[in-house]
Length: 310
Ligand SMILES: Cc1ncc(COP(=O)(O)O)c(C=O)c1O
Image 1: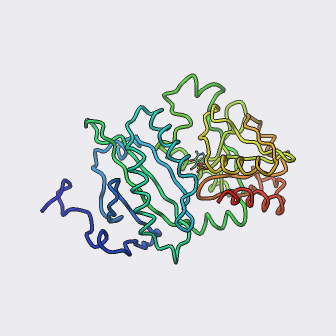
Image 2 (image 1 turned 90 degrees about the vertical axis):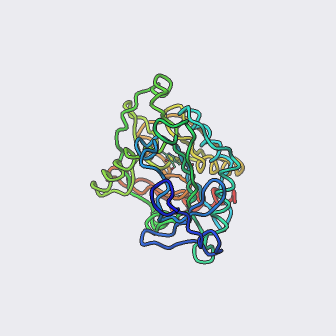
Image 3 (image 1 turned 60 degrees about the horizontal axis):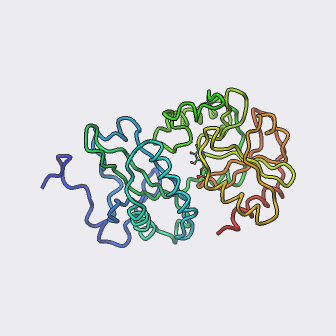
């Protein structure tokens, strides 16, 4: 029998039935689940060509770190996905669907050989001209060697202009600043620009020279015993990793501050980190070719603070 795509149904029944349903591809490990909790073949087509996620990047997503079967910051990630959908005026399947699909991926992941996983929740606005029913899936992906190398060895970053002016988020909510939409082409282009300049990563800056965020990370500074990050009102994503780090830091007696700061603060701080679910807290070693303070013991303290949550 042919399915909607004019070919055999794409769900691999062996994958569904067999407990070892992960697959290792040249591109890495993949486990895919649908929102009803069934597993699907990661190699098989899943979306129609006229899905708005495919055609316009119109949708939202989350990436959650799972270590030894335990998802980190699952509640804040789901809260943020709901916030993104609200900003986009888009329907989102209920939390139970995401939790069910996420659990199916976790249950199928080969934890003995891969003790950590990036769990993606992806949701599109559905079919162009359709009834607005969103389409989603959960996918487990391994954490690449490059990410692990940067976690251990730190990164060199370049500052790149993001073109935001002060008050833009409030003035132009249709720009969806601070929503985690599927339209990450600009973010990826910025990372290619960094690579072409011989750097690993990017820190975006606003028109007035204040620091925003990385293309896939939150910027965190240490100034004495204070941790500082940019407010979401400046158009950045509220980071779940930064949130977890600040939570632990406050417990340990650090001050935390969420406020705009100029690019010059990056060079004057006691340390700068890029925080995100998959990279955890990665230390910045140089900015625009200039080495900055990157103390090993302070880095260990920051990593330990973040890890103390789990
Ligand atoms: C633009 C942007 N900012 C910040 C982050 C960090 O968010 P989290 O710590 O929740 O992963 C991400 C994560 O991918 C991101 O894409």
